[in-house]
Image (cartoon, rainbow, N blue to C red; front, top):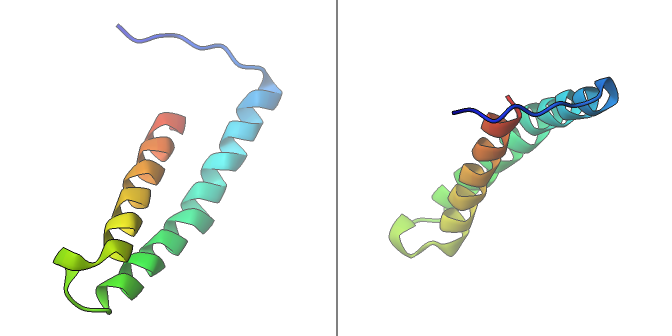
Length: 67
């Protein structure tokens, strides 16, 4: 059963603004980080790649929650 959350118009507008920022600024930044880490070679031992993929997962989860 879904939980209903009530927000003010101001709160709703802040959530929309955050969503837009995450989708237009943060998502491309993480994609760039993943590409840079991938270019460094072996992904199985690449901590930067693992960190970027984890950050991407957290970001996508937050985007999903806001939507």
